[in-house]
Image 1 (cartoon, each protein chain N blue to C red):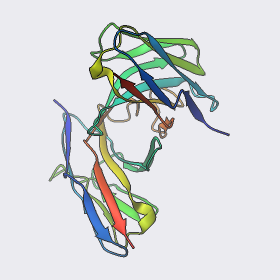
Image 2 (image 1 turned 45 degrees about the vertical axis):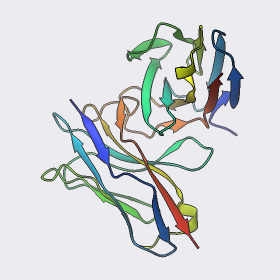
Image 3 (image 1 turned 90 degrees about the vertical axis):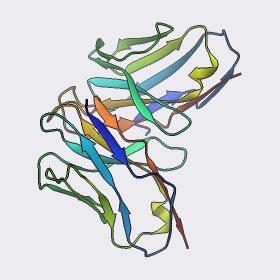
Length: 114
Length: 115
């Protein structure tokens, strides 16, 4: 069973479109995250939710809006896509916000904006 | 501010060679330190961690020691295998014992091991 699953795996779209990436975890974790990995493999946190509450909101354009309908799901919606949004987006989860247990990452969604 | 600097890659080694990937950090307070590994086409996985000075993290033959005096957390393995080919990330938590989601990652070092 996949612990953290995200869909789609690949997403190719044109500038100006709106798209969503979905993430689900079946680990029973309370905290979920979105990370962005650029073409040089640099990884940076975007958002974190704990029990459906937003707890980390890094400097990210307003075009990015996370939504957590329940603690097992954290979706990422992106409006008016730009070329610079092309990257691999990783969802992750951890047991809770203060835990030292390892993060569990999904396999990533490769977004290409043309 | 807090930051992590790790050696530029790619690193190419022959099987059974000794591996060192350097990582140094700048931090206020007492962060925890981590190494994550990313195999091709996959997400990151925790490889090892250390939560205080002089702690040694180890897993799968990899080791790293938290050196406060040199602000370093170098990753080592005595004999690498082809299956160790991956990208390795050094990371620190912003506060000691803080959520691992609030990590600062280095830029990653790609390791290729040839048979």
